[in-house]
Amino acid sequence: MEGIVDTVVLVVIAIAGAALARRLGVVAPLVLLIAGLGLSFMPGLPEVHVEPELVLVGLLPPLLYVAALQTSIPAFRRALRPIMLLAVGLVIFTALITGWLLHLLLPEVPLAACVALGAVVAPPDAVSATAIARRIGLPRAIVTLLEGESLLNDATALVMVRIAGGALTGAAVGFWDIGRDIVVITGGGVALGFAAAVLAAWLLKRVQDPMLADAVSLLTPFVVVVVAEELHTSSVVAVVVAGLYLGHRIPYLLSPTSRLQMEAVWRLIIFLLEGVVFLLVGLQLRELVGDLETGLATTVQATALVFAAIVILRFAWIFPATYLARLFPKIRNREARPAPGGPTVVAWAGMRGVVTLAAVLTLPPVDEVPGGYPRDLFVFVAFAIIVLTLLIQGTTLPFLANRLGVREDTSTADALAEAAVQHRASRAALEALEEHAGDAPASVVDRLREIVEHRTNGAWERLGSQERETPSSAYRRLRRQMIMAERHVFKVARNEGRIPEEVLTRAQRDLDLEDSQLHRSDD
Image (cartoon, rainbow, N blue to C red; front, side):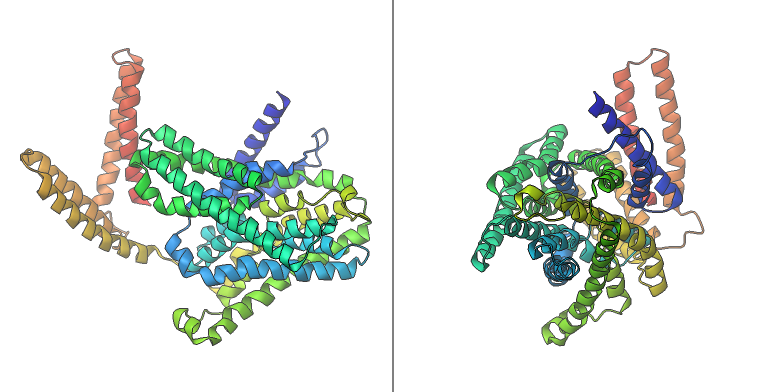
């Protein structure tokens, strides 16, 4: 019962923090992190201990899965080269150089342990970076790059942590051993993710009940993770591959009702998980400070060194990777040369989060390492890096993007593209109507034509001036008032006993669906 109460309290705090963040106009991870830091030192509040299995199996898979579901495969494919440079090259570069610098500061600590910590802090977080990027209106190319990086860099970092951890505990690690591990872990993850996605797609195609379709979707990332752990392959890669495949195929797999319902369910789950994750990060502080046995001076020096290293190394990698690559004619002809502001924003968007939290908890216990190592220091440094990057980079990224002019307003271009495609879609709809109308009443055919015409006009009206009320806006305003009146009549009839609750539920569902469509048209 105590565990249930604690969970409810965490969720309530996460919801309150998210509401406060929206009111303040900032992203929720920042508010929840600060709330967790403050609550961790409140008298009487029990210490919070996070198990690595909770993060690796319970929190990380659904976050990555949904991020992959929402990723555009065509955009991902176009940005694959820079994504791989960041997700693989930058993570390895950061882990090795950071580990080497830390070993210079702490020569008594094994180099493998230092590289393991470097891998822990190397990957930026998917949640915080993309949340901030979308809120401040960064160009879609940058958002795609950050999303793609954060989807794949987790696997690179966790594989490096596993290899460095093996070397730290005395396992033989040679060139061929590392190569075999990478092929087995990563290749197995790709194969498992693809197989799981094909199986899930087969099930979703045949499931007609929206509730069952939602159940399949909810179970998919967790089943993939459990199987991946049993097969000793990369669960992160498997979940991402499954999410990318299914996200691209969902329009062909699910009924409209299933898609709408599944989107609502996942949005709620991710909203709660993101809030709980960053709240837990903040709540860890008191326990970490209490367990810390390393001296204050060494702790501060190690934290400052690692923070400076990951920030500087990201700049040192991104600018050459952006501009030196364009010395090759094939790349130069395919990719436009970006202004310096874009790479600067990408380099500064290096906030760490849930993957660093998960990775540091998997470091081997001290008693398994010959000669030992300062695990308490490494865990503290990893949590400090999460806090520092979120508070420093997360709060200043909007200012930096605004100062450098790295913004993109795509509303007009999006409206124009939508109107053009809607025009073609309307023509196809009218052709289908003429083909299948048959002996249908003329009034029905005329009404369907009016619906198509209304939708087409609404798409073109978004391109016009918003100072005067358009016909579509007037329609939505008046229709909402009509829906409110209809709802009132049905509720009064239910209260007076003239209709049962089931009739009210059906009527409200129809009215709610129409009302939600009217709100969508306002976006």
